[in-house]
Image 1 (tube, rainbow, N blue to C red):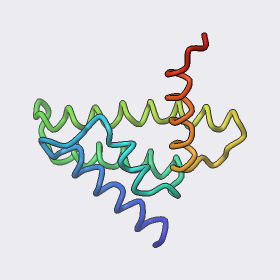
Image 2: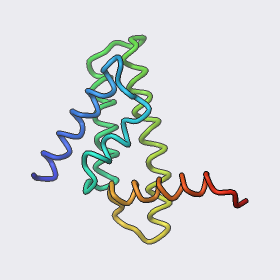
Image 3: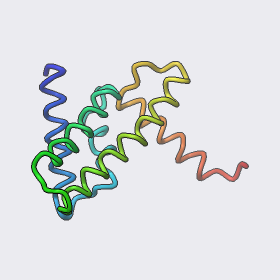
Image 4: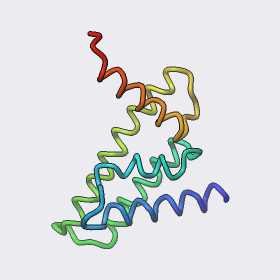
Amino acid sequence: MSIVSRTDAMVECALELLLHDAGPKMDVVKILVNRWPEATGLQLMVALIGAANAIEQVYAVGSPARLDADRAIRRAVLLSLDLYALESRGISPARGRDLLAFWGEEASEAGSDSP
């Protein structure tokens, strides 16, 4: 699968997750990362921003769907912080699998009794 077709599929998936009424909007990034662990952080960012842009192009201001676009942008911002943390560790380009490992480390640290 080419990088463009993978990114297009990721944008489509993000759109479906964001616009589905019962969808886990909070987990859109984790779903994308689990589905495409080889995707780069930049591809994940493009998927989120592309989905947000598509929503903004179709739905009027004030539409509940526009809130989903805002959520996607916020998720992209938070994702950029994690990608920056990985880059500061020398992992560049960071991929989905790197994010999964990083999030696993954060969860382990949060659950430990250490200060």
